[in-house]
Picture 1 (cartoon, rainbow, N blue to C red):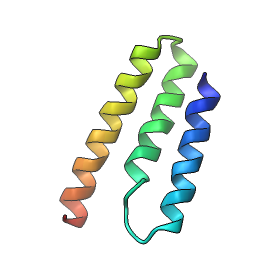
Picture 2 (cartoon, rainbow, N blue to C red; picture 1 turned 180 degrees about the vertical axis):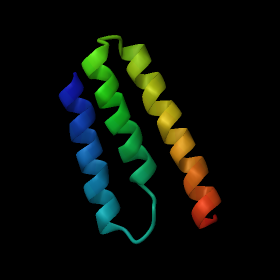
Picture 3 (cartoon, one colour; picture 1 turned 60 degrees about the vertical axis):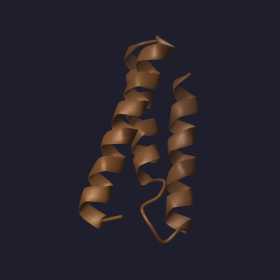
Length: 68
């Protein structure tokens, strides 16, 4: 299951590099941290919670830094 999160992080990072804004970067970071969490825990609910937490925090920070 952990490889799925790392593949998703890589796909979103490549998509981010193709676009001119910080659109997919928070999703990529959330996927990366969910992948790291999956190495420690097999519980999918915890992995999804970590993904959502880091994605939402990343979106919040990118809006504060780069503006709407």
